[in-house]
Length: 72
Image (cartoon, rainbow, N blue to C red):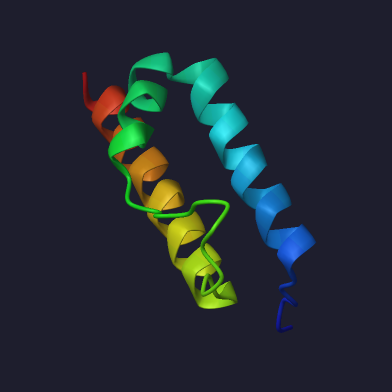
């Protein structure tokens, strides 16, 4: 089944992953500032692809961080 993405869905997913990182792994949350997603109120060319890539990026960071934590 193909998932449908819209702006509300993507931003909700980004919020959920970010909130999980913030609550469970504050040390990783601090590093999210280094995750590139260059958005400003003046940016008009942000695409759904940009949001999808950012979501994928923070999910992968979370998975990698969790695996590293579990190895300790």
